[in-house]
Length: 133
Ligand SMILES: [Zn+2]
Image 1 (cartoon, rainbow, N blue to C red):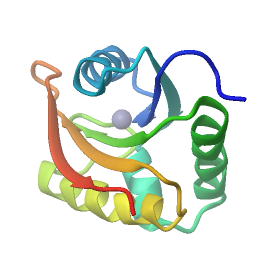
Image 2 (tube, rainbow, N blue to C red):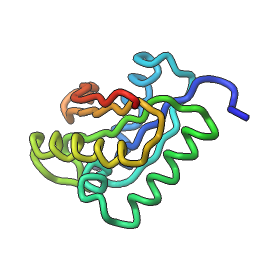
Image 3 (cartoon, helix red, strand yellow):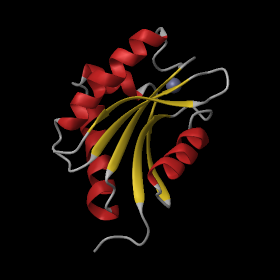
């Protein structure tokens, strides 16, 4: 049974500055009622590396969001001034795009979005998309 309401999923940083901007953007962009949040420090780096136990944990949580809540879109977030992944913006972009490939390898029936969040005005920028298979 699927939960009531439309859900989307974010794999976001634990950084408290990143939560609300991404949730509001996801609701406005995809017309969802709720956004399930999976948070880690520097999740773009974790999914770029692709081989820590944390990847399996993130995968398990994303799968619950998709299977129990019927989420059809999963967003991976990189942001400026990230304590968990303190690299330049262009490296974040590389990590987000490679991390999206890690998400694709899970075989979930979802659209995958790459998001950049700047640390000046915390405005969301969509930087890449992978359509569902
Ligand atoms: Zn961060």
